[in-house]
Length: 90
Image (cartoon, rainbow, N blue to C red; front, top):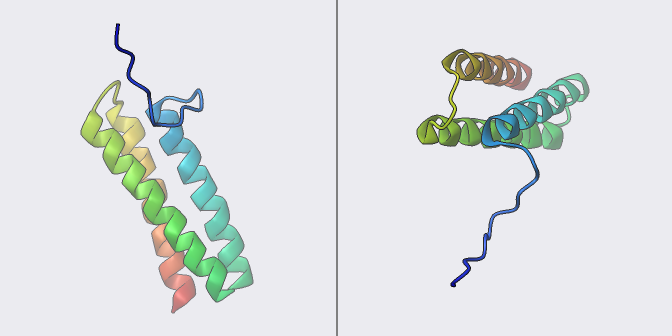
């Protein structure tokens, strides 16, 4: 029997839970960055939002166990984060 090694890191969370956790992390980073208005923190928060958006897009593409309302709520939360960052940077 051939065994293939799984090169992905598994954390015990399914894909949708991973998306949710990345969004929560991005929200916290955005909150901290917009309070401090530190340019480095704002950039890191932007990266966290982009990473969460990429994870969300991947989850949507895979479509396994997808709850459309959950995905729409995730998109709305990320849009709110993006808007908050845009306002802070102006």
